[in-house]
Image 1: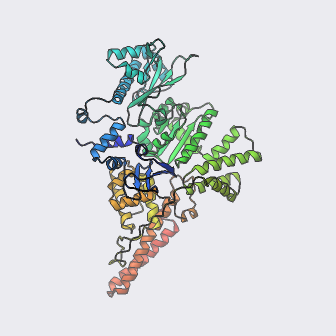
Image 2: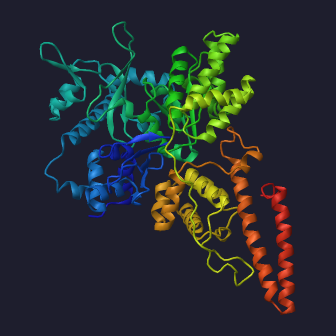
Image 3: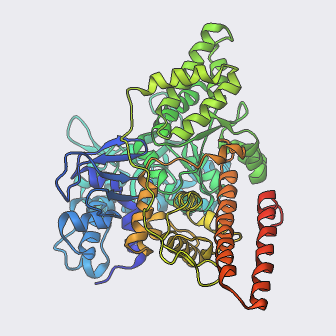
Amino acid sequence: MKFTDQFIASVQDASDILDVVSERVQMKKKGSNYWGNCPFHNEKTPSFSVNPAKRIFKCFGCGKGGSVFNFIMEYDHVSFHDAVKILAEKARIELPRSEKEQSEAFSAEDSLFEVNRWAAKQFFDNLKSESGQPARAYLEKRGISSDSIVRFGIGYANSGWDDLKSSAYRDQVKTEYLEQLGLVIRSDNGSLYDRFRDRVMFPIMDPVGRVIGFGGRILQQAVDFAKYMNSPESSVYNKSRVLYGLFQAREEIRKKDEVILVEGYLDVISLHQNGVKNAVATSGTALTPDQIRLIKRYTQKNFIFLYDGDNAGLKAMERSIELLFDEGLFPQIVMLPDGHDPDSFIQANGEKGFLDFLRENRKSFIEFTIDYAGVRGEGDNILNRQVIISRLTDLIARFPDPVGREIMIQEVSRTTRVAQSTLDADLAGKLKSSRQIPQQNFRPEVKPENPVPDAAKPQVQRVKLSSAELDLLKIISDYTREIVHFLTFFIEPHHFLNETARGVYEKAVQLSGQAEFWEFSQLRELCNDGEKELLDRVSFEKYSISPKWKDLGFDRESVDMKKWVQDAIIRLRLQFIEAEVLAIRELLKMETDSDKVLALMVRNKELLTETQRLQSGSLFSEN
């Protein structure tokens, strides 16, 4: 049976390539990638790498590379169909019915997912019943709509001690599964009773929409009971690897290329209900590396913390910034006014007021660290300033990309009025113990074919990849459809003189015309072997932006890398014009027909005018 594209995508979404590879290969983090000895050929020096954000692997020794499916196919020597089945089983995703019928029985974990689904339905039905009236009143008071109740599957656990257990007995659900999931608890005398009683229930889902656990908020606050209670960890629920609301938010996160991280269930629900549908929550736990890698499947661009201004929230953000830096992400922080949480603020100000506040009050981690020092009572004396600056350089030293480190050091120097040379020296000392694996700068060395075009317009050639072409491929690799849509206003495929680069751009444009959202791995699958090799090199090598970008004023706050993109576009267009001018000069040496000579001279003048227009910077102001 052939799997549908939707099913394959759901399996890939649920399969962390780093986790899959790490079960078979010992990997070590270097920069934003992970490195190890290739399992497909003998080697002593690691040349096998995994890029978790783009969900690909590549060996620079034997050349093997691709998606998590390609890895399983190579490692286990199986077909694509079998690789999908292996990963679906690992991710505990139920196979399509005809496949399932061929299986002997549900696995134990399949049964646990089914029991969680059953329990979620019991809680949902309870909320609609007479016993759920207090819970409905609470949700109405909190401004939660009926649509949100359905979308997030909100329910109610009845107040009896054995309500769920009795329902399980009625529906022939095994109590051993309820106990494994923590839905019932065994007392000292061996009897079982419900864990969740008289609580509003929030099903916790994995990224593909399966219920893996629950969070319950008590209705009648009592001294002996916690306000919120979550399911205990089980074989299907690991709280460090899940984010509440991600299933509902993932497409909006991809669309906006931005995620907003909040603390609680109701914060997420209220934001979604009021139009801000790219919010997720850690649900009372500190942000973990697994959660960050999960988010990076959907965005690597804007990571916004939106927390209350209390001390606990501030400390949580400070710890989380370190983890984000380890993954090469720039976090931004927004502190809400005193007395507000995300739920209350958006209900008071609406979607527009909320988004305006978010835009106007974002702070970099540098601003946050300095402001937080004031909150903690660290005065502006010399010793405290020294401690704060040391704290900033400690964080910057964790960031894997040297270009990003330089940008941040410049900002620290401007903000603290400490000489950049002093900060550079401090940072260099902290980097000594964490050197990255050296890699060769990649430029395809291919001898030109037909160096003199047979027409005035230059033909695509197998020439050395230019810095403009490399920059644009890096931009496309990192920003996918969003940036390709922008590039098509200014660049045609024929502007790329390198044959391989031109092929990649053509396929990126093709993919953008077919799909509203797409990922790097989808572009890679469309490419031929040479184009895949080029994309892999761009993705895995230690890459820095071309030097000229600094002169154009690019800084960390230009989140869309506007200056870098515009500079690359102009350089590519100028490169194409230069090639055409050279072709015209060669043709003029040989042409004897006066009409053709005149036409070539007219075209040459047009190209000079176009060059002046590009160099003036007016290209983007005209569009």
